[in-house]
Image (tube, rainbow, N blue to C red; front, side, top):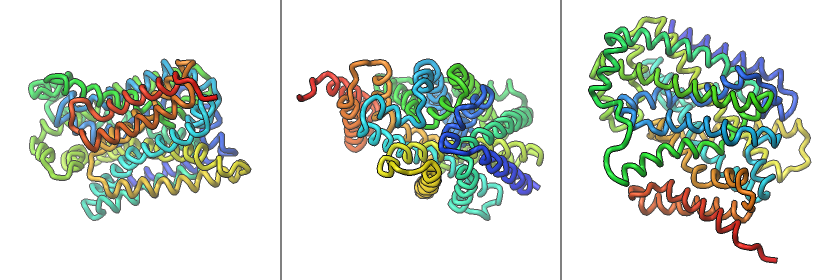
Length: 469
């Protein structure tokens, strides 16, 4: 019965995605949904894209293991990213009437800056997209009782997401996100109510977490601990701002006010609701402390089985249907956006300049071809990684933190920023970060902060040095 319900859910999702494809008449429809999304749809796409597999399975398990101090990157950093975008970047993005964030770097700086930043941002999506594929593989493995291996499940999940994203683009993402947001909210709240009751009530669960020190947020120690804490927060709070999926949600809104409000409301909804799976995960430890054995597993991904194992072993069928429906909604909504965003960026800003005479119809075909290629790349990454989804997401945003955020912010707020400064910023940031990762990965100053500092230095030096005549 559970398998039947899951299959039915997949058919409904795929059907919505294919139906949405009827609204795609040109590349602008495919990439930004014709810039026509109302507030409720814009907010839903922001929430559903961020509320992914790592939030439900990995962040919740990390909280159960390490407490609030272990999840400073997500949801704290990721929520602040959406607030920063709404307050400082959304209006500028919307007014420029661009298709991709790479277009900003070309319009503000130069073609070379556009290409190098677009490549860096595209590469950063491999970890995030792979995390969603890993989650789908885990779901299929758990539901089949191990008959489907994790890697086989990852392949099946990638094929499903690709299937409905390839035709409808941003319209498919927007409409499926709206449906999946409703499923997430209803499903997880119902499961939290049930599991909390099984654990003795919310007061008992919260009290047990408090006694175990899980609400300790600020780091204990000296300079090193504080810098690493700050770096974890900044990686998502700032490093995820120059991302195509964030840009697409802003520019898909019907007007400037909707773009700002959608990001703010979506961020608030995400931050508040991210604590629901954490509550469920800690309820699992109260119900059965034996789940804590997963924390000591050699494969770091094993801790992500806490919620699926609890639901399958301890809850009735209706709760299993709601939970896995919510989980699949979270994964699919994030995965589809994570596939479309780098595809749009790489095709428009790296590939298309070499084929300038393409018609709009030919460009749509090129977009879909690149989407397949990126899906295969992310699939290979997922099959060969043993990191948790939380770790994969954090590592992904280090790339854009050290290379793209400084040129973006300087391009909007510093009139003296030049193309030379932007190029120096990218090169200085990536090179210094790479060296720090290889030679001093555990030093007092985290490698991503080293890269961010050199990126800022490169921007200043390159912009202030007089150009040669």
